[in-house]
Image (cartoon, rainbow over all chains, first blue to last red; front, side, top):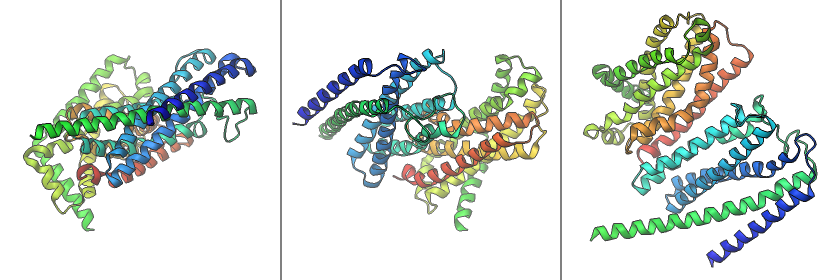
Length: 225
Length: 226
């Protein structure tokens, strides 16, 4: 049953994505200053939102683990962190492609770019830390603490374009942002399939964590005899 | 009041054992000097050039030296199960943590005070033109390094590959603190008193210290006791 739901969600995400790409390429006109490449924003921004949302859920589940001590909170934290990292990478790479076309360079040491990279590296460090701890309860505890500490960077990344002078384009959705309503609708509209994909990946990953725990328990039982 | 005495007892214990053995201190100080030397090959060490990058150079040296010092902070207690005794003693975990942080802070400040004149001599820089401001920046940024470093030292103490994990986790976390310290130090070494932009960096440094001290004090009990 659970698997059928995941397949259905996957199919829905694929269909939505195909429809969105079709509309993007045929329905929406090129942006006045940037030309065709601006369409990358429909993936770049939702990927960042998904990434931050994942890290936020990881923060909540880390606190949940420290409060309740249940292993499924830890499974949720590691799953969301991994998926968040994937979407963070998508955000960084799509941004670099855009920068190559518009700015002429792949990377610049700008506040927004740098803070996002730091954020990504911190959460990558979270995964490395997990590898280094053998005992599951200790691993869950230490990585929960690291996840809470790491989240301090996320608001910094988010607001860096307001707080500092940066080369990164100013926000188009909030504040003084202005964006044509058709573009805006597409930006949010494309967030839906990306969120669906994230949910599917997290569900699969949590299932794996549960299986790994079961196998671990069986192995301990076998050694006990 | 009793809490402060507990913090100081732990700090004094750490300082005493470090000053008697000097194991981390010697390694850290000589490492700092080696890096100072290595930097002279990385760029042409003219006075002009050095002034421009002095902040970055100095804080990288301090951060590297600090990692060596911080690695030992909790690892030292593993022998003879000292850590278990400390954790079970009536001292709260946060006092234990703050005590160790204070000890590391003083040790790292000591290393910095030795490194600065050496830097001045080797690179022909008159670094003490804004001594009061420089002292403020040193105190604040070193606290940032040690509070995060001590926290991660506690976090990684029981891990395999402890010596590798600590710098890998600490440096990305430290970036805001180091960045502010580098910007401020470069300006101060060049003899400018902080204005506008630099005061914003100073505020960031203070904010960084407050946020991470509060977070670490809250979370350290979970890390050490569970």
